[in-house]
Length: 209
Image 1 (cartoon, rainbow, N blue to C red):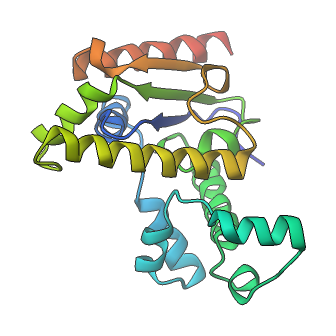
Image 2: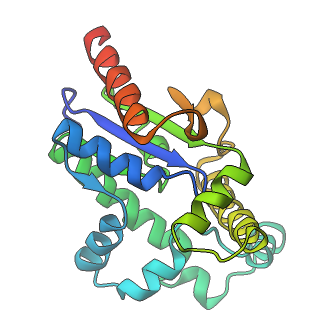
């Protein structure tokens, strides 16, 4: 069973909104372990998967064509029944996330951890968003895009991948405020203010529980 005194802070984020940076800074501020791509490595180690395959499949839903065949026609291909199907990988990742949360308080970025741990009394789910132009400039400043157009294309694809993945595996709508305890516009706060705001909210939730 989950330890009810654990603080499980999950950061959902739009691409380019500095969600990872915020999550890591928050973990440092609160003295908690931080998990992002580390989850993938743990899945690979526990189940013997190739880490490269897991990283390529990270936060991406099964292809629409395969989902149509499975749902409409009941067609089962070799990939769908293999240990490396997206569903199998998601199940393995879910088990690892639950194990991490059972071991103690932590900060986790993405991977539907807010949904997986939704019944945990210590869960605090946060979604970080910002206008596309602000996020595009953020990517350019980080050296991940050389132009506004390139940055916007990357944002559109990454957001679409994350939305499809989240919606497919949770039955919820990614980024909808009702799914989270706190939503924050990253463009309105300095990084330090963002971390301080979330930390205060986490402390408030703890006192009320």
